[in-house]
Length: 217
Image (cartoon, rainbow, N blue to C red; front, side, top):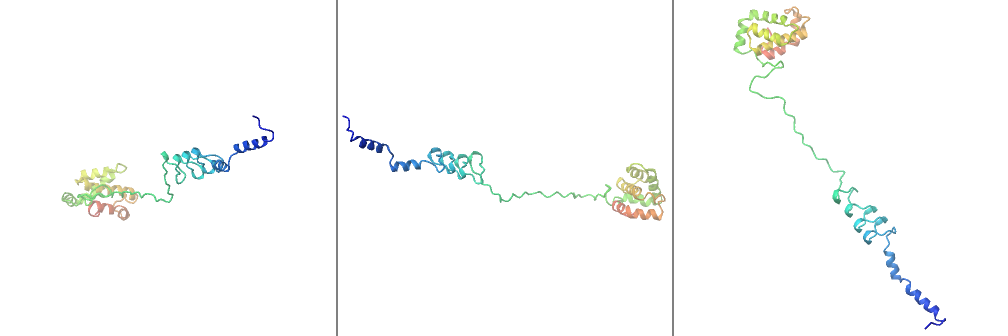
């Protein structure tokens, strides 16, 4: 049966009102939209309009791996946050002290030239130096002149051979000759001159006394 023309406007109004959303439905629809208009993954809006993986908002809109914010903004591998403390003190590094260069031994102390200190105070060398005192100076001078411009060991070997001293004691005399050549050659052309004696006393005699155990005679 067709409705009369008088009832048609009423039926159209009822049909329109049935299709229009209610106030509650409008509120629910509005609530499904994020602040920036973009819904977050999983139906939860991300702050700033950027979705956070897993549906949890990330401060500033930038997600941290695994959805967990990392203090300092730097994610650690595997999504575990690592706290960065810029003011944390560095660990102290223990440095072992340097070993003492001096090695204690039970033997005689070595002098700078390699011979033992007091090397000429033993009975054998004392017997030679006292028994051949008259010729000792002549032999040392002869060896010094014969070894001029030769290796430093030349004087030592010559004195040991010709005077009969031990190797350590002869080394002290050889070092005295070498020192005299290096520092006093010009004034020691005459070995007994006052100038030679003074130069040798300034530059060489202390070393000889330490090595031999007595000053040069």
